[in-house]
Image (cartoon, rainbow, N blue to C red; front, side, top):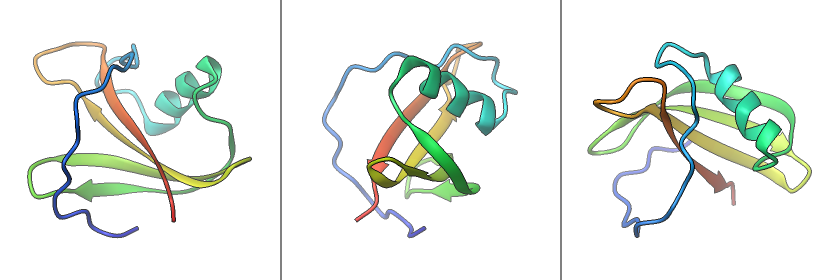
Length: 90
């Protein structure tokens, strides 16, 4: 995985993952899979990831559409909710 220095991200709607802030990455991935948002064949790597502004847990996985990365982060000032963003690996 490469470091993302900065990124201009427009606002977008997403449905937070409804899990406690101490949930594991595997539990978050299971929720996204159950929703049909991702189709994980194999988790390849899980590790911390940092941008210039924030820290996340990055999960790299093989899907039916190639490799992807999901960034996960508990939402601040909230309990039982996680932010996520899915990226294609190019």
